Image 1: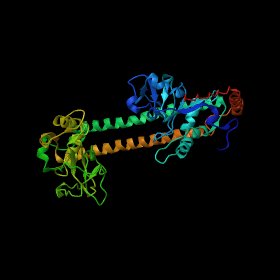
Image 2: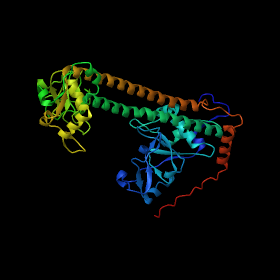
Image 3: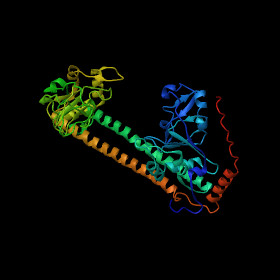
Image 4: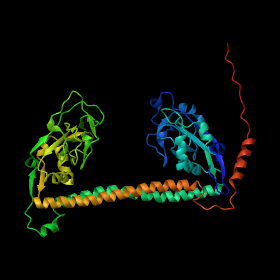
Length: 456
């Protein structure tokens, strides 16, 4: 441990905790859980932002009595000690007083003089998280033992300074959290902005100024059928559930086509004994249409910019063949509120699961059609607006990443003694540790009871 600020002392969690221990899962596993009763906190409930109720399990009094050694108290530090969530830490809120924990969660109960929030934030800091990741054992499963937790080094400041650190971190975290919330909202605003752009475009408002300066003719309405030169679909096949490698051939999954985006990684490998029709090979410039998907994505379409050369159409992804100049217009219209409404009316199936659009229903959808010159100008303006919106979203994502780094840097700074000023009037941590040692030395020793021999 690096040199500590004046008044701080190097110790271990075991020396400042009155309890460290994890529980168990009742016999029968999740089938033994009850609809209500005493909460059993599991690793899925323990997160850095607190204890979450989602997925909370319950046990009855008899099951809980077998876990009386891991009763949760308010302000206990709860630490995930196994699996992918190892190291996640939170403070037990008062509402879970009397709960139990299973074998994947350890209770750490600090003694008086050590703030639970200070210990929790210390365990959440970057150096502690790195150490937790490096000091687990198990070839196939990460885990922390009780001994590892007991021997975990802790830089301990005076109690008053612990409280100042916690208060300062809470203040800064609240500001960072508020900033993150605003940045997260940017994605929602971006979606709305794109829909507003499309709505204005297909009402003719986006190019009202342009039309005023030209001799543009009236818009007409036409069916998609009248715009198509043909439709191509692949076959429904049982394939290997893995993306094909460069030397293999594959078929795209329905998830390969979302609004305006073609994801070539969303594909399955075709069986060696199947040779797809050459006309179903996906090529540059193809207009792909998702005819079967969830209610949000049924009818999603994308124009392939660069095809990988080894992917073929499935039965759920169609190629709509039309003039290249029409493709962006049709794609943007189908993405608009009016287009989405038309797609939903054309689709059939369960609202909660997969929806389908038949080729016949697709061809009957009506599309507004301005003169070619205005089409081109509208598409240019839509794509320019979308590019600006996407840049805004990208900048928000960068800012959010910077906030994540800032939060981690503040935690690291706090436990180096650099976040709040030291007060020479604070009682030093050495005096606190001396009292803890004395209290433990004077504590009555638990009586050992000899087990009775079984009658012969």
